[in-house]
Amino acid sequence: MQIRRIFLDKVNGFWMVFSMITILIIPFIIGVGLYLKAAPLFENQSLLKLIFSSSWAPSTGEFGFWPFITGSLYVTLLSFLFTAPVCLFAAIYLTQFSSPGLIRVMHPVIDVLAGLPSVIYGVWGILVIVPFVSDYAAPFFGTSSSGYSVLSGGIVLAVMCIPYTLNMLIEVFNTVPNGLKEASLSLGATMWESVKHVVIRGNYPGIISAYGLGIAKAFGETIAVMMVVGNMVNTSGNPFEAAYPLPALIANNYGEMLSIPMYNAALMFAAFLLFIIILMINLFFRYLIHKTKRQ
Amino acid sequence: MELIETKTNNKVLASKQIVSEASSILRVKDLNVFAGHHHILKNVELEIPRNKITVLIGPSGCGKTTLLKCINKLTDLYKELKVSGSIFIDKDDILNTDTNIPALRQKMGLLSQRPYPLPVSIYKNVAYGLKLKGVRDKKLIDFSVEKHLREVGLWEEVKNRLNSPATRLSIGQQQRLCLARGLAVKPSIILADEPTSSLDPISSKIIENLFKDLTKHYTIILVTHVLRQAIRLADHVIFMNDGEIIEQGSPEILFKSPKTEQLRAYLVDGN
Ligand SMILES: Nc1ncnc2c1ncn2[C@@H]1O[C@H](COP(=O)(O)OP(=O)(O)OP(=O)(O)O)[C@@H](O)[C@H]1O
Ligand SMILES: [Mg+2]
Image (cartoon, rainbow over all chains, first blue to last red):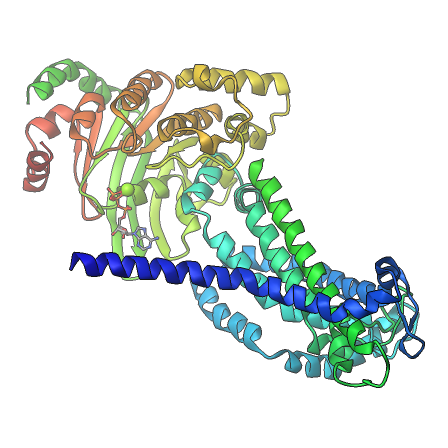
């Protein structure tokens, strides 16, 4: 009996360590693999030029990734600007002000939104957001647009990320004990002041990590964005024009145009860049969380 | 039992005063609280004498905390609770008014079962209520922070780390901090819900002695499960069971010759 218990203890310990190591190693293997596949590209061009050059002419061997990097960042940033306030206020309302009944109704709604495949968001974007941008938004700002634009990409991406970020924020805010709110209220704070000081300030690390995960997810999102963003190399910075994010570049071209030399390596390099940028986003948010936790 | 005897002898005078003064600061009439079909408080009627310690006793789950939450309207936070009846503080029925509830709550300091320091520094915890009141004068706030931290015997322990997070204090220190920050808004009533249940004997003693001093300026409503503490501190006692007020009156009568079998059983089990 005793031996069996000790044996099980050891075995389970082994499996835990094994699982953990697997999880740690996979990203490393992917990163190294992508790098090796992209390596031929570095033979004729410097890394700096690859990243910061804007000229994209694969047939002549010119691979400048800058438009794709900025395109990705731009769409992600726009979506974040839409998502962040909406999710924050919705999560506060749902956890602090609404009746328990509303939360019971909202939870399945949020879960359905989170579970929809992204191609559905893409179709919805084409049917609703693209015409909205070309027929209303662009004329409103005195310009014209086909609708397939950074703005459409940002909106669709925001709608996709809202349930994801919202769920995380709800989890964070639910951890605030009622006693803390009661303490703040009993000291004479209004409900909103209590929310500000206790629910928001007290949870900066949690809010930041919810946003960070949301951004990282938005940055790598492919299909839905690709369907509405226009997919044209462009660095104008005009949200009513098309852009070409990194994931769309890979998804659109991988396995094709094999006749062009280095094209495959270039796509691998795009994937590698995506990998590195997402890693950097995560590290940056880790750092922010660490800083706010210490205060 | 000896404890009760000596205490009651001292208390006879005091209780006569309560009756003769008959000045109650707070009156509850016909208070009912429901959570769905669960009748939590049933036709509660009571009076709280001014500048005295009223001790609220009763078995777990009888509705003591809920009663305190009604008194400073924290029941608003719980949508599932339906509250009806009236609670008069100096003639104002606070249950049936919408006038400035935050100001009303500032008239009552709350000390909960567990300390809940706000997620800010020690200094800011004490300054919190003052700032909400609109006090901006830094000197005045500094003065008040020191005064109230001294009052609860915490100043010497924390004066060199006023800016460190309040959550790093020990539980006993946190509870005293919560009392200090409550006193800083100058309430007239202190609602204390088992304030010493998570404290060591020494910290408990500090709080108890403090309560005795505080009755000069404050009215205290104290919930406690510690009968000895109730006997030590009570000027007035309310015994609840299952959402109802069973007995209320002076401690010598309630503790020495309880009228109801319920209170008698509670006192016997408690000792
Ligand atoms: N928000 C709520 N929703 C539903 N029921 C509640 C709620 N708050 C309190 N109750 C119920 O009301 C009853 C009284 O609770 P309360 O916390 O007032 O008891 P108590 O006398 O303070 O007990 P204790 O001595 O253990 O602290 C309990 O049965 C509790 O389950
Ligand atoms: Mg209680």
